[in-house]
Amino acid sequence: MADMPRPRPKHRHRDVSRHGQVRWYVHVPGRQRVRMQAEYGSEDFQAEYEAAIADEKPQPRPKAGGGTLAWLVARYKESTAWRALSLATQRQRDNIYNHVLESDGDQPFAGFQRKHILAGRERRAETPHQANNFLKSMRAVWDWAVDAEVAKTNPAKDVPLLNPKSDGYHTWTQEEVERVEARWQVGTRERLALDILLYTGLRRGDAVRLGRQHVRNGWFRITPEKNGVWVEAPLLKILAASIAATPTGDLTFIVGERGGARVKAGFGTWFRLACIEAGVPGRAHGLRKAGATLAAERGASEDQLMAIFGWDDPNMARVYTKKARRKVMAGAAMSGLDRSKS
Image 1 (cartoon, helix red, strand yellow):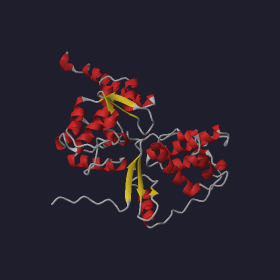
Image 2: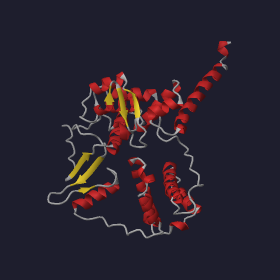
Image 3: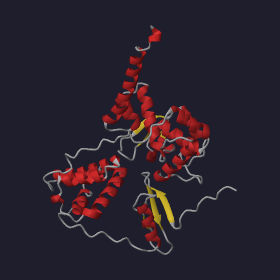
């Protein structure tokens, strides 16, 4: 007997704003509905949900006193610099600030020195990407403070980023893509997810938002949630065929078993399990890297890569074009060592 689908936790409701933002609420009959603030699927989200069901109100953080780090962060989050960030970046930095403020929120921000920021980076050094996100978040607060003449110097300015030993997410190989294609045939939701990620280059948070409203005259156009740099590219025939063969939703191509849109966090877990079943180590973001690698190896310029993948920093594109040039040069040089051709 097939496993019965797990019921959604009681009184939890989801809606999507006209801007594509997913919002979760708890609505117990007879009470005012409560909007969840934490990221869906996180421990904070579960804690908020349980508190709302129990009709408990989270204990408010003491009001930030003037001159404290908590006060500084609160002022920064009222600024145009903060509002200019994408929602994804705001959520990421919010989590970082909340952790920092739990221990140091009541400390005078004027007392923070380079050594304190460096110590915070070192405490996170075992996870270099998290350490660098912490450092970028601290730089942003004090950059704004210096510009607003609230602080005289930025203690995070000269603290260098860590250089991760790995390239992060595993970049898919062609053989791995073929194994997933063999396991998940065209017409399955898993195959459609693979095709959308591979043939659009979108991040998973944007891939789950992609729908018919983004497609016109054979092109798709979408504004990524991370940086707002819109992406416009042809909808390849292989992807169009996959979409046509698969059950989709009214506003999103990627849907769950019941036809509802998937959310970013849940989609990542679901796609990871599909990859494991196919026997590959790859994850959603690794397909984006594979697409960038393939495009660069086939001659895409840095400007073209920036247009395809929605990057606003040419250094990101340069990573892939540099690797592609090295591969071409290595191939040419090794052919010169082949004595069988002499």
